[in-house]
Image (cartoon, rainbow, N blue to C red; front, side):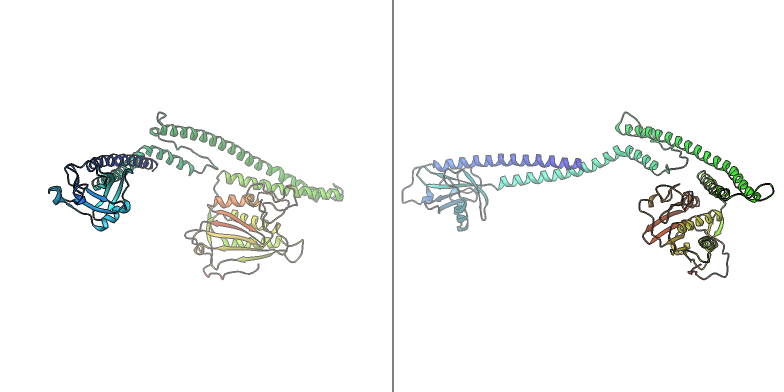
Amino acid sequence: MSAVSLIAVVAAVIGSVTAIAFHSYMYGKLDDQLHSVVERAQRPPGPRPAPQAPPEAGPLGFVGGGGQPLGTFGALVGDDGAVTASKVVEDSGLRAQESAKPLTGEQRRALEEAAPVTGEGTRSVDLPGLGGYRVEAATTAEGYTVLVGIPSAEVSGALTTLIVVEVCVTAAGLLAASIAGTVLVGIALRPLRRVAATATRVSELPLHSGEVALLERVPAAEADPRTEVGQVGAALNRMLGHVGSALTARQESETRVRQFVADASHELRTPLASIRGYAELTRRAAGGREAPEPGPVTRHALGRIESEADRMTGLVEDLLLLARLDAGRPLSYGSTDLLPLVVDAVSDARVADRPGAGPGARHRWRLELPGEPVTVRADPDRLRQVLVNLLANARTHTPSGTTVTVSVTPAASTGGPVTLAVRDDGPGIPVELLPHVFERFARGDASRSRGAGTGTGTATATGSTGLGLAIVQAVVAAHGGRVAVESGPGRTVFVIELPAEEEGPFADSQGRDRLSTPV
């Protein structure tokens, strides 16, 4: 398009210059012809006519002479500028007296209004019924003022023809240039499109995690360094080689780290179990014949040892689970009905929510379940852990009196995946923390201290490991689903989408009424 526009501008400039030059040349030739007629008018042949003779017999005697174009006229002008006599050559094949006739009144008025004065040069005048003329005023040897005009229609027609030809030729040239340019550019850019296709395929590869085999390369035909496109292709191949090496090194590093975490977690389970066992053995043996009754400080220390051992065991188990999920180890998939898992998890959360040995829970727990089973192909133990983490997260980071609602929407209602949502009306997740809630060891408190958890939806409960929501995301991703969170003051929703089982068995043939009541 740019090349065609440039060609159009160049053609317009050339055409304009040509038209102007042709206009000047043709009108110069016409004016030369007019000057020759004027010279004849200024020196008319024959003796000076008698005063009583008609004026047109003398001053206008030049009209109709040889060498004059058809349509030449002469007009005698009085002192007041009015045309007193006139002659127009209509047919050059007749004699001068038979081939000329006077101007009409309308033509004389047009001539009087636009005619030049003596010594002013030539001027273009339009006469009704006759067309355009080049007119010049002259004074004859007898002292008469005459106007001489020759038609300019032939020159105007030639100029119009030239302009039309230039426009047509330019338009045809632009059309041909557009077609040829499009074809040539398409052929020239075909290798570049193949280079772009290679870059597009690379951009669609999942490079952010896991083992990546970056095998895409620009074909050798488009990587010839002797051409500009080949230089681009060769540079892209070199870049892909460097990126592939970096991804391989990254994967090897991640594999070593994951293996170390898995090995360390596995090895730590035994000493942690031993610590808990010895602490419990010491507590049971206290007060017997072998050991005296421990004091309050010792009892408190034993309690703290058991508590911290339990916390460390949970951390080790979480790290081991994440390491296994990162390594892509398969889960125990099976046809699983979500509804019993949800009911059990909410019931357990309600029991854990009781303050001490009090009779009631601090939060309000609600279920919104469909009336029929909702089956997915999943690992029930891992899904139960997802529910436990989400409910513990809501219980820990919302104040007393908050309502926590768990809902399940079957695939038939969504037209897509099965949706599991955990919603609460707590204060919400801080805006600066919201993008990081699923990261490992993300905490709602900047100090990362135990017992200082703040804000609903954070990944840590009071004294927790900070891996709860990271496990939720990893487990859901391992099932081919996705998890998202939306939060604001008074509303926080964690939404899990899981692929529905195509033909899941119905555990309850009788069906169940939709449940939307407190548990």
